[in-house]
Amino acid sequence: MSARSGAGVGSLGGECVDGGSWRSPGNGAEAIRFERAKCPGRALLLSAALLAAAAFTVFGAAAAAAAESAVQDHSRAAATKKKHKVLITYEGQIGQGTAPGHARFVAKRGIIDSGRVVINGRDTGPIVYTTLKFTGKKGTFRISEKIIKGGAHTWKLTSGTRTYRGWRGKGVESGAPDSTGHIKVVMHGTVTH
Picture (spheres, one colour):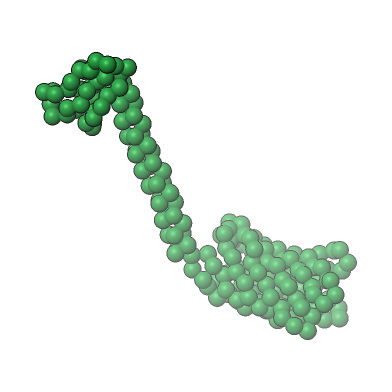
């Protein structure tokens, strides 16, 4: 087996042996220059390996930076959302059978608006589930009610458009329809936006 010694070329040392193998190639650009002169086939492999390592470092760092930026954006968005107390009153007529009911609403604190309400309910016996669509001057928002007969009346703001896009909220309410179907409900709670 013949070998060419790398002694005397820079401070790298090492050797190119038969078959293009390299022993103790050193590192970096100096090793590539030395291998081009002493062992050209191995120099090409070392160049490719260094390029792959550099690409991994650059793209890995870019991906990590993008992930960190996304986490920071989400944290900033969560930090800027604030909780506000609300008071919403609606009054009107509940629906009969499958027909929806209709009412007017006025919202103060947290939500400042007024307009129409469409009431759709489902009476399951001990619990009444109602979906309310509020349409005001600033947009629409939907509230789901859960009314336990003889117990708690709760509500949850689930979606909205325009000003109310992305808003969420929940609370309690009081009020029930009379024998003619007339209803007045007062809702207290909080919204986050």
